[in-house]
Structures are given as structure tokens and as C-alpha cells.
Image (cartoon, rainbow, N blue to C red; front, top):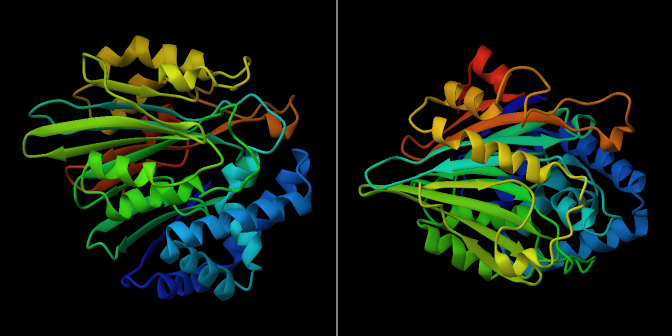
Length: 357
């Protein structure tokens, strides 16, 4: 995956969308085409995809009009049909309507505590054929905060940090209550948290205000004068669960619910690697704190090479929809308002070094 960077100076959503769509028209068109092919490959027909996309777009317009206006402006400037951009923005909502498949995607670890800045590391694992390019984007929000984030071309946000000292990681989940209803896109919830939240309490309020049709966990954390705090906000149509750090101040998440009540409806297939990856992070957690991003990445990885515990590489023996790759390793620095990113596995990041954004 190649990382593209862009800085917006306007707080007007439509103007921001126009400049982004103009700057990256080929990327928005290509990403939409790749995802529409992928949805068909997963068994979600074109009419169903468009229906979910349009329902999610309507839900977004009611919940966050500015984000809907931005997405429409991107589509218009890039000369891509609005529903096609909306389909990428609602990719998780469309995936929730597909037949269940094992997920080997995304491992997150955050350490917080009194008198300490938050320390984090995440792998973003996904299908490499869907994301030839990713976006690092900096912009000012209407709420008066500066934002830096990573995302795909067409999704509102994925991983990021704002100038209030709040960071966010993102992991997909699966629940029995997920449906094709087309709720507020979960990526848009992550975006609104980054644009508006000055605290974990703000993030929780924003997340709770959205009606969703797909499940996700937003791990949010803040650094202030007294130290740092964190919480994982598990979203599902059945409700919102809040998971606090353990007694040693570590908060870990992969792709299964940790909230006891929501866990009852967890539908992540048994052959997913989520529990193995969580167990690995749990085993190495004591050796992660106090390290710089590169050392933290290597320690979290559990070794070197594609066979290390939370490092993913495509297996050419499998159908491509069952191939997973670690496309990004990222550490969020809430104290310095920065993202340390590397387009690849943690062991590769440790060897080559992160780029600070």
C-alpha cells in the first residue's frame, strides 16, 4: 500500500470534499470499483449494495449532515456516482450483510496511567488487493480541533488523533444484531469522535447517539496534565458496551466482543484468528510499555517475518478473499499530536522505521 498525504485548511465540509475529490479523483474511482467487485465476490448483489449504501447515506445525513455533504462533494468533484462513494463509506455496513467469513484483521494495544502519556500500537490487516493506496489527512474541524487521521479513499476515518490529546484505534466486530438496515457508517462515527471529542466522555456520548447496523470497537484514549486514560467503545445494533483497561493499565482489543453482555451475541466465526491474536498481546503486554514506536512494534509482533503472531501476509494458496495482509502499522502519539505510520508489518516497521505524520 502506498500512502498519500493531504492537508486541508478549510472547515467547510463541502469545500473540503471538493478539494479532496479533485486532488484524488483516480483513487476514489478505483477504490469504489474495487469494493463493488469485492462485494459481488462475497455474494452481495449490486442492487443490495446500492440499497445499503443509500440507506446508510441517509442515516449519515440525519446524524452528521456535514459528513454527508463532504462525501457528496468528494463524489461530485471526482466524477463518481454518489452512491458508489457512499458504498465505500458504508463498507462495514455492507460487509455485515454478507455471509459470515473468518476475519484475521486488526490488533490493538494501548497503555495508559497516572502521570504517563498514552502509548499505543495497532496493525491494520485487510485485503491488499482492495487498498493499493491509503490516505493520511490533516485538517481543522468545525468544532475547533485539528485532526490527523489515516483512512481509505471513501471512508470517513479509521485511525487518528486530535489536538485535544485524544487518539482512536478501530477494529471490526460481528454481532447477531448486525443487519442490512443501513445505519450510520461506523467509520463516520470514528470521524465525528476525532472532529469533536475532547475527552473519552465526549467520545462515548457521540458513539451512543448513532444508530448503527454493523458492529465495531473504537478504542479511544486521552493524555492530559494528570496522565492518560482509555476505553474501548464496542458498538452494535444491540447497544454500546464500554471496556476499561485492566489493572495493569493495558487495554487490548482484536475482533471479538469483550463486554460480557454483548459477547453473548458475538458471531465472529470460530476459525477467525481473533482469540489467538488477543492471547498473544496478553502474553507480551508486560514488555511493551516504555518503548519507542519501533521497539514497541517489534515487541508486539512477537518475532520477525510474516509468520509472527500478529503479522499477516497473503497466502497465495487461498482464494484472495481469504488472504489477509498487514497493510499498516501505526502508533498514535496523543501528547505530540502525531501518528507514527508504516505501510506494512510491525517487524518491517521496526527495521525500516516509522514515518511521523
